[in-house]
Image (cartoon, rainbow, N blue to C red):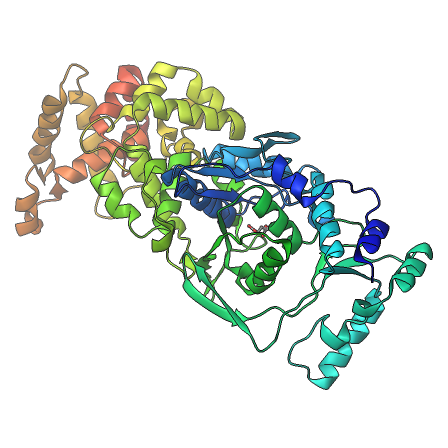
Length: 554
Ligand code: GLU
């Protein structure tokens, strides 16, 4: 067979050669040890939390090595795509501050010298490599129809063949002559391009996975499809061409691709390319609420599988990143304790120390991490972040919250900007309810009392407090006044004393404060009550006490 002639027949419009591609996309000339990584999602219009997890690993791996990370969009699977699936990805990454050095930056936008970074715009590149494989006898057109392939599969099943697929004696298009191929093409038959594998089922390959260590598998013997009938590459072929020509040094991707590595290694070899290093990351799992079993985070069942969920809920970007880093690397929490104020992206990440098994995504832990993150923000940052979130996701609250910026900044500053800040808010969507008592428009009184306090006692406490309340007090004076109220009302200012002899008292000073707190805020638990009283001011406090008194006295 004249392979050159066949290559011309199959790819008449391709004029470049792989050598041209080498020139267009030269080696990057980075310093020794610098790693080039990529995040390569398909544009499904949805960024999975596992995607953000992977993107972080890519960016950190490149960053700690002084290398380059880039974003490539793998849009060769037309079936799975939606119109502008790219924005969901770039917006999702952008919302959490994950930035790549190169690649796609938005809908129809990209930066970097190794592009285009959308696979659909690289068809000429794949076909150039494909043509050269045909010239070398390493690829051939296959005209088998879907029905023929189904029949092949059924025969293999019936025969109990151990290895199934298009290979060896089953690969009937392997041996077509030039004349047969030409006749079929002239007859308008459609074809795919297949790899001509020289693999041997008795041989094994080994490779070193950066996360999992040495992995050994049988060599690939399948004549894998490289180009589909529309000339668009399969994932496997595009991966090999792109990761070589974009000069990726470390392919970091989900563990579902491990079984394809033998195929990829065979293709890298056939193309004359050096295979990159591989690292297969574990899947992001959760404990199923119903069964208690570990399972993959599912797009269908779990709202938190979508990165957009965290934006909508108002988790600060730092919180999610910080939390994902605890999942990505067991050393992160220790590092964080030792470096409390260093930005998370400065973490000296080590791919080799990543856990290889399913990591559990735990919303409760995320909430805790986020409370910590928010607790150390200053009041101005918190005010601005809440405003920005509310502007997009809760217009009503946005208007209320931003009507008096000084008031709201003061509100979020209660128990903040001190060495032991309160850790109460995990996400911005909680704030409206959390602070509802500070805004008349949001406030609905609820005077229900804890079981140990009677309505009569509540009435007496509120009546007495309304009498003694002074807006000149400093915090100590304020508290002294509450303590002074205790004994005449049958309570004790001394909690220890109460615990020793509870029968002698109706309750202790904590109960008195609780009643006052409920009268003013309708909550049993709030940040510092003294600050709340100062913030709400005399008129509001007097009106609230009067309303509560009215309620208890009926
Ligand atoms: N487009 C592939 C996916 O979304 C990427 C796999 C890879 O990173 O190579 O699963």
